[in-house]
Length: 110
Length: 380
Image (tube, rainbow over all chains, first blue to last red; front, side, top):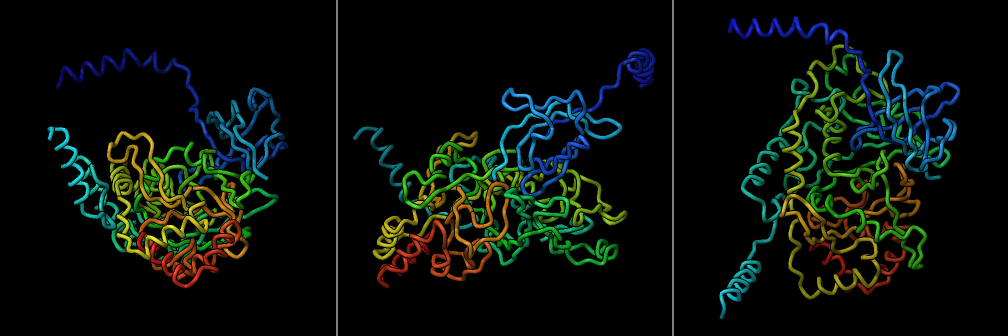
């Protein structure tokens, strides 16, 4: 037990600089769902996701670097409509979820 | 006689002597381990939750078996629940921001004490209310395995064959083909089950570790003291196995009138939507793999006319409903999505829209033929 404790303590001492020096990666998430609201002036999109009838709203923010496209064609945020099916690759920041890429997969039915 | 011929003969005799499957029985051919999971899953299915074991804060029932109880676990029940959505500009809003689309009808005491409510508030933005009876779960594991390509092969959204029957697929929120729920909104049985734990009982699980909101507002502090998730993955998986292994009960043997009714079912056009047999695709479970079964559905949406219309859901308009599988119809006490019909005759007569032609041909049949068709339906 004493040997194990020493080994753990030694490992902790040796690894501490490595761990603290490593850049903190923001948690990344992918959501696929139906667009509920698009607010281009706020650069914000709400997506309906969920399991079965248990649905959730996820709010994302688009930034200048966010890629938005459909079948290889570049889109603007205002091209997205409520009811469209999208997949959004996001990362969690202090100001909320920021989308790196939004891919439109299906059209809203009207 | 060769050994092979004897084997074939014996297999035929055994198949002919098989006992009919009753409501609540598992499908034939499960392994010992699978039958064990079916039995253990039934225990979770039949269990009753309390606020101390995770129930609520909002709920419709205290356990799966409270609603799915008649004539056996996995069957129907007399509960009717409330759904609400809004249709605006041709787009359906499930009103998640106001607690939709399922509006729970009960609260645990702590929530009632905190907010003074007995049920979830009805969404103020709703444009429609839908009442929903409890669906039977028998045979749903087989419906889950019908390949998308088979379902889509029955679709005819533009009525290219000019028979008045269209058939459109619905889709889940993430765009997959929907097949479960009265509007074919849910893509898989596993998701239907996991969603039901949360929406019907307020039980969180590892796939959905956070509670539903209360009419779109957060749960008041101190109301939900049970740590999430409230059931573990094994309990969820066992319940899933119990449901997917539930067999469709064997239809009753048909007498002469019943056989005539079966012919009429096709002749007057019922079978255009209530497709009599479907076949499952591949599955890791041999007992469910490539199985033909009496489904009586195409799992597609059909316009049923304005009198039955209620809520929209994803691509389903208010008047579009998924063809109800006619499995264990003989034990049903209420018919149609909201239970408004109390007999099969009433249910047929309430068909409108794409079902109007078959309804009119049914009404035009001589009394003996109408009785024969009903006898057939009651054999299912």
